[in-house]
Length: 399
Image (cartoon, rainbow, N blue to C red; front, side):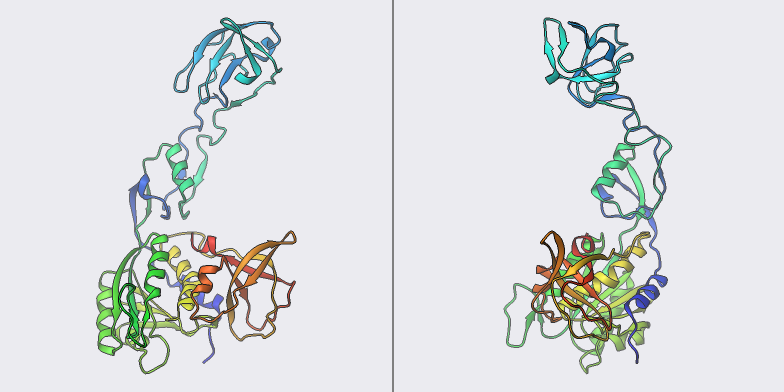
């Protein structure tokens, strides 16, 4: 059976997404959520012309006077009166500019006299004045919906006066680990056992995407236990993610049980690491079966599962950007699958270069912890040192 290319698999996955409902949440719960409404500014930001400095508001035409009496004092949050001719107003950062003034001279450029000032640097019109609407104008459409809100976005919504916004509900994700060899961290290891790193890794990435994660524990390697765990997970989840058990071995029960309980839509992709990834549905819940090797799970989650989760939440940008850098390595053997190599992008000789981790085995999780990028090598391509290659930046992928 021919392996499905990554781009084709992504297209099929995104076409099969069921969007989550929306809910209204307060500002403090918006970070990382996907906006589901249009936001149009109802106010100017700032609402009035205001001072960008502590200093004195005056008319440029009066700046050359030997003395300029200080006629009023305006602090932030106060509104001054019209500026009298040939006078200045003591003003502080953020305070509204009084009518009649056309510049602000910062206090360092003024000599303070008895009840007056002398300007030491000739100002220009508009100097140190932030005009009304400089940041945002009333009526301006700032968000169209589908944006994943970062901290700065939440701050901007607050600046527009919004106390809450309509966002997608958090995806409810059930996480299953399969493999009798797995032991949870903190427990003693017997011969032949390993610690379950996938659970911690995936939980961290899922919570970073705003998901509610339900840990279903380590599932016994039997058909009955696997079926029971999948049925229970499907009852109260939007998405089920399992690790391990999706290959074709005698102890790999996940794929067969998904086919019995629901529908398997994708299996075996032209991706390295991560070929045995599976996707399907059990009842209303979507299902991803990730490989058990930790670097395979890491790569397939970022390349395939994350875009799916973002699409579930109504995000308009779900695919990461590819950035060109210079290969600081040779890759002489063309593979039959699209490869994602753990790498570190560094500045060398004034250029961005990608350096590979020395062991690209799918079982080496240290490569993912060391890397800051994934180098994308299309199927059938060889790379010579100095060529341009595309990378996915992990800072973006993990954000």
